[in-house]
Length: 211
Image (cartoon, rainbow, N blue to C red):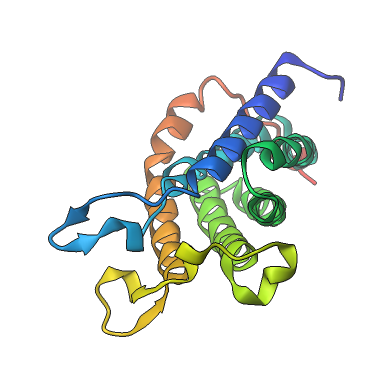
């Protein structure tokens, strides 16, 4: 496929989302709600990253899985390089690994469900891809087991009530991972609105040509 304007736009959007997520994931949300410390539950990155699945799904819908994978790979390469400039090396490595695995899984799931009800493919692809992405990212970024990727962030390893409310105390990054996944799933539902609105603009590839 020759380089087209749409392809470049998708790559730029993907790069912007990943780089912004890598910066924002380092900042816990301040404040409290009914005594619950939000910093023990979420980072700002949780609200931005799910947009990557919207970009991937629109690319897949318009051009098919082969081109969607190209957008993911190009966006991955550019984003990882830029992420080393704006985030710690460990965050960049964790983000790149999780991004690539999660987005490729999203493409596979989307393609298997693309002939079904319009919302099923983007929603299930986003949810399943988010589960893998979250598990890989937070493990690689903060778990002591993967300290080979770089030093641990002390604030991520501080113990706090699980999800901010449970009696048991766990390293804060575990609550971040669970809270992050919940937000990704919620945002996945919300992003069905722009996906549905763009369906008449982003014309689908014929189902029989999907590979």
